[in-house]
Length: 438
Image 1 (cartoon, rainbow, N blue to C red):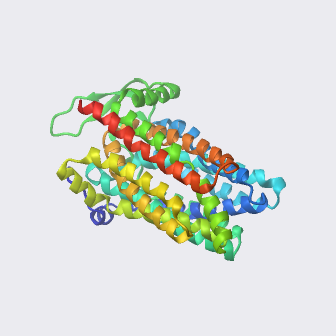
Image 2 (image 1 turned 60 degrees about the vertical axis):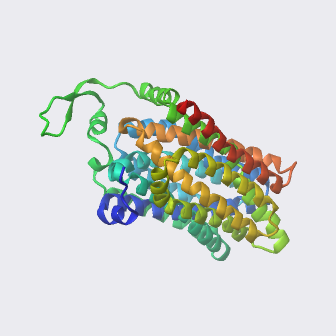
Image 3 (image 1 turned 120 degrees about the horizontal axis):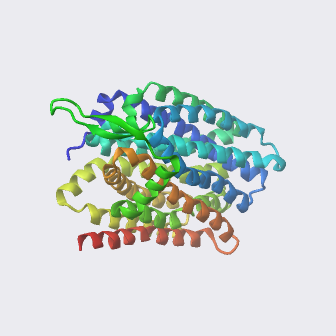
């Protein structure tokens, strides 16, 4: 299938530009919040690894648990309205971090983090379900790469700026910027027409009815007529899980990403312990800036990988090596991340992180495009959030478990284990896809 280039998509699709702009602004604020929130927890808890672990769980687990519900919700109701309402609600929640001033009210930071990422699950579910309709199949690869690459670029820019702002101006400024970013995002989503966010059948389903295709002449567009009330929310939620279980490719993506998360989930603690503690003490780094540097390397690497995904996809399509490409790149990125544990300085560690993330970035763009193209629109919200929710559930538990392991092993040892486990996702891919070939 011929894919649009990045330039053609951005210049020719106003609705996608608005969605991309909204994500860009809100993700910038999110990374200000992440660096500032983590620094605030470190400061108030006297650098407790358990407190840091709880912060990561509060970021990841609510998003994961809310995702299947959010996916079903955005397949039933207006995706545009969901994005606007959740953005406005997050303005208020982001400002509540300003109330945290002592260990006694640290719980506010945890609660605000839970609420931010619960609401984020609904926003992301709506955005991921709407995006393919905004760009069409021919624009999906470029859109996927741009949405994720700008997110990861903001991981780099936002974490760097957030670390700098926290060190120079204090944490309060970062939290205010985060709140303002959600307000701007809500405005850009408001500019997108409602009908552009779903196809005709899904739009009809959102009117709480079940449908059959109405017979029309070949020259006319097909449409749908209501025949009876649609199924309940819980029934449609179960339908999503049933689709994931019974569809081989969807289940492969789900299992593979869960396996990746068993290693990838430790990255939060690895960066916090290596950057904020080990290299900060060994080389005299400011802890916030050291952690931000590692997230910057991660974001730049993923962005670089995403941006070369279009040319890479054209090449591997021509050579018909898509499946081998996904498996081997996953294995290679895990090996390189494990090797980063042997780097003597923060800079050399950051370089290895950059290379590893660039490899997995291009792999993820190709994988996610294949996944989105395989899904019918009416169930896309559920499948996107079930897959993401399962991955982040494991990611959250592993983050907390990794914080406990810091009492028994070095962060370098944890880095090696993380790389090996995340690389196993490539092995799972080969095993699952070999069965299809056979």
